[in-house]
Structure formats: C-alpha cells, structure tokens
Image 1 (cartoon, rainbow, N blue to C red):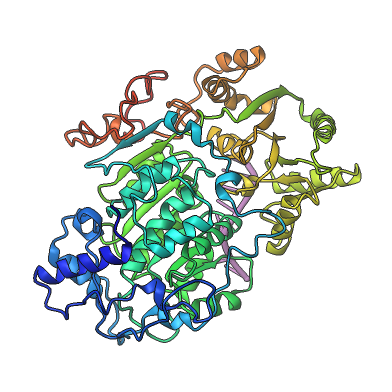
Image 2: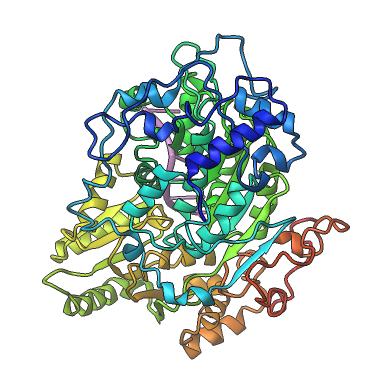
Length: 615
DNA sequence: AAAAAAG
C-alpha cells in the first residue's frame, strides 16, 4: 500500500505536532500541498482550485521518510528539526533585515509557467529521456555499484518506493521515466535521507535527475522557510554549479521539467550573456539556482544573490570544478560567501571520474559523506568502440578527411550522423574549422573564445544536423548530452586520461553504439600507458604498437594512472588505508550492490601509490 | 601547457 505524498506529509506533520511542537496543529483538512496551490485555474490538469491557503501560520513540517531529515544525520535533534522547518536554525540567519511571510509558490503562481514539455520540438524530437539516453534497462542487473560510508541507505527499485510527491511523480511520468536508473536508485535514497554524497556516474546515466529530484522534493517540503528580504537580494535554497555555461543551461532545462508545477522555481545564471535578463529572472523568485562560478561570484558581490539560505549544494562535474583552475573560485563560493557550512547544508558531488587528489579536496566540503560509484550500463564502454591510430601531426587533417568521408557513407535518413572532433587549443579549433569549411565539410566549432551567442548557435546547428561536424575544445568534453553523436574523434588527444573518458562519453548514447577514434603520435607518449590500460579494461582491441609505447614509458607518475577497474570512474579514497586510519568508514554491510566483489580486483593492478596524496 | 569561468 502506498500512501500519497500529501498524506505522508500530513501524517508526519501531525506526528511532529504530537511530539511536542507548540505551533498550531495543521490538520489534514486545511493542508494544501504546495504543488496544488499555484495551479492556474484554467490549467489543463485536473486540480482543485487553490483553496484559500492560510498564509502566515500554515506551518506544515515534514518528518521525512524513515526519520530521514537532513537534520537528523549530523547529530541533529528533534528540536533542531523543528527549528529547521519553522525558520532557519541558528547561524543561517544574517543581517537583521525583516523576514517576510511570502510563500514563494503562491507569488509565483500568478505567472504562467511555461510548459517545458511542449517546446522540445525541433532538435530533440521526443522528450523521452529514457530513450534518448539509451539506457538499456535489461542490463541493469549487471551494473556494478559500490557504496561506502556509514549507514548507507539501501537502494530502491522503483519510483513508487521513493515518494517524491504527486507533482514530481507526474513530471516523472511526463518524462517517461519508467524505472530509476542505477545512479538514481542509489543516490536518491541517500539524498532523501539527508546525507552528503560523492557520486561517480557517467553523464547520460540520469545523474541530473538523481540530484534534482531530492532537491525539489526537499524544497517542496520546506517551502515555508522564511527567507530574509532586503532590497533586491534573493535567497535561493539550492545551488547547482557546473563548469561550463552550456552544461548549466542543460541542467536548467532538465530541472525545469522536474520542477514543473511544483512551485519550485529554477533559474540559471552564467557569463557571456546579458546580466540584466538574468537579474530580472532572479527578481521573480528563485529556489534552485543553476550557475557557472564566475557569474555567480559576480552576483553575490553585487549583493543580488545571497547564499546564506543554501540548504542544498550540488557540484556537477565535480572533479573539473575542483581541479587547479577552478578550485579557488569554488572554495571562495563555498567557504567565503556566507554559505552555511557543511553539516548545515546538504552537499552532493557528481562526476564521471573522481581522482584521489580531487576527492581529498572535495572532502573539505562534505560531512560524513557516502561514496557511490555506479558503473556504466553494460560495462564501462560496451557501447563505444574505441580505436587508436598512429597519425603524424602533419597527416592529421588528411586522415580526418578520410574518416569523415567514411562517415558520410553511414548517413541515415538522409541525415549525417554527428561527428564531434576534439582538438587541444582554441586556435586549433578555429584553424581546423576553417580548413573543413574550405574543403566543403559542413562544420562549425565551439570553444571558449567564441561569443556565447556563437557557442550556443554552434551547438544548436550541430544538434539539429545542419552542421553535423563540430570541432570543439574541452569546453564540450563534459556533461553535454547531445543525442546522435555517432563518432568522437580525438584529433588531439588530451593529456589526462580522465579527459579522454569524458570526451568519448559524448558518444555511445541514445542506445546506439558509438565510435571513438583517437590520433596518437609522439606528442601523446604520456597517455600511452593509461590509454592502453583503459582500452584493455574495456575490452577494446589494443594495437600492438600502442602496447609497445605503453611498456616503454614504464614510470609515468601517478596522475594518469587508473587504479580502478574501468567500470567505475573512481573509488572511495577513504578505503585506501592511508586515510584516517582508525575510523571504520566502510564497515561491513555497506555494499548495497548485493555481493558485488568490491575489494577483489580493485587496486590490485597497479599497487596504487599509497598515501601519495597525503605525504 | 591548455581549457574553462566575469567583463
């Protein structure tokens, strides 16, 4: 028997009331869940009209499933839970500016919410993510899953088991999600239980939904949080950061779908676009803010955004966000911009790869977190055929031309399948694009020196098939979900094997097989070993010459070593002995995959440099 | 060394 979300809210509310809360007792009769409150009366959906909700004293708490309030985890007590829902606990509250009683959803309800499910027409024919992401559900049982940490909540098998609320459920149906993906099955219960999370999972594995659902559901429960209002500053409750503007837009588009008619407002801000429009959006209210770091910092410094009410922090592509270039900025946002410290917010980090050094940095932002690694559907790269060819620098262009001609033969329905060509530099991207243009190939390019308008146009043109060849720098390496990319060409190989993994992950999506071709030469010697290893681990044919190069560079430092089976993009560093000896971070019974041999076969291959990151 | 991210 499955109770409705509204019921469970009402029930736990009365439980709370019964256990000593002195506030007015909400009763079932007066409770109207937020997602029903702001339905436009003329809505196509059957919904009761907004029945005169009582504004000021409508304090409905939420006990959370199975005692799973966020406040419960970190030594929170019942009273803390109480203060959490009635306002914001101590410490989160800043300047003495007045508090208003505005209920965001109601105010917002006056505006008509654009149906995000309607305008998916041109580029992506059907909003059928399950199909688009090509998740092979039959292969689910084989997905390796590794979890570690204390008291890991068990995974769920259906969306029904995790009651996210009727409004979200309806969006799940609109998305045509039938079953949660592996990362969702594992991450959602963890996040609903209020735990911090470090998760390794490929993009396209449904990880955006994995962190959006709990955030949205959490905000719906706590929509009554009173936020300070002072001038034009807005106080989002959740912050989602990503390393590129396009990825932020993509996350925003998805989050809008998940939040449709929930009353939870999602706004995206990023650089390169006029700030005024973004300011106007913010002024209309924001619960979930999706952002790139630079623009966010700008907005916080202008005091247009305050992070002091942030309860959920998500870093997508977290390993990139914490690498050398980004880390100071992220640290500034998280540690020096008034955001509640870890323990007082819920922090979730997602990435396809998680090098140990990055895990170490990340642990600064996390509190008693759970580590989750989910393998790709059907083992690491079954869907991607990887090829490496030895190509001298001077031969690359003519070699590419051969590949493109071959690709042309494979066109379907009069449409080219898409080819994504990665180069190392922005200059190289311009130059290669120009060369392709001269040679009558329908190509465009995307890189960080192009205007945002050009970048977005290039991406649209590529997605639509108008220019089925896209030359890109690493700006497009991560996270972007572009259906129908049949071929990824590593025209210039990256120096880091993780970048390679992210790049080839742009294909092998949409349930189709993908091809990844790499041009290798003397400039890529440092990649020989990790590339050969990776290919070996993912059952690819490794050319003999590459193996020879690999064995020649015997000692190539730690960074590029993949000390993990290719199934996962990472392994919990806390398991590697050098971390915090004495604390049992992975006591028995945590392995929620049910008997997947976690310790066997991992870490054995390379004798991973123990303690390297620590000493 | 390069890429990304603020203008």
